[in-house]
Length: 120
Length: 140
Image (cartoon, rainbow over all chains, first blue to last red):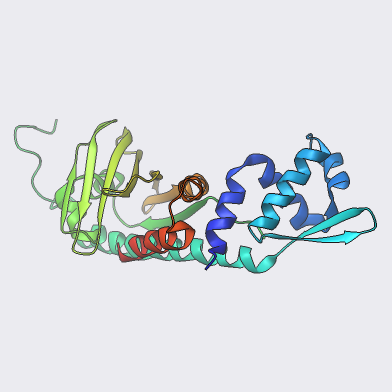
């Protein structure tokens, strides 16, 4: 079974691919020629990034005449977003407990200073 | 459709910044709020830290200690050859106490590294690795 969230993060780990994804998300579908006008890399390099994105099932290519137009597959990105939300929710729980703990202990009563070290 | 590489949270705490700093960085206080049963923390850059509970164990390396303003460490599940993510806490004084900003970052490079490992013949691949990571993150 594929892991769309993992594939998304792998795709985004490469700065050029991040740029490709960004352009596709804003203005897709786009061809490699169109992308090469927006990003300072060769059309061939873009084609490779497209292929990687398609392999990871993050983009879908559709042949139009002599060129292939690519667009993002939103389902994979939704999974990645859900994954990040889960990590965020874990922090929400930790931070809520942290706040509760800190506010429940009066300042100055927080306990022993490390022995041998005197404050001030 | 942006998928960020980091998780960012901000909370307001009704306690002085020094107090918040202490609760954040002293192991005996960590035990009071962080879901861990054992904690050790060598509070200096390069210092090693660890959090152990029944469900999970994490190892960490301290990167920045600027009391009472900034505390940064990187961590990962113990015993796994896996890239770290970086956790950064920033404390600001406010009129009513302290604003705490948490950023955990590095998920993109983490996934990239796991992709490389699976290319190198790790059959478990994406799904198991990330499921494990997710479980570890959610269990903590």
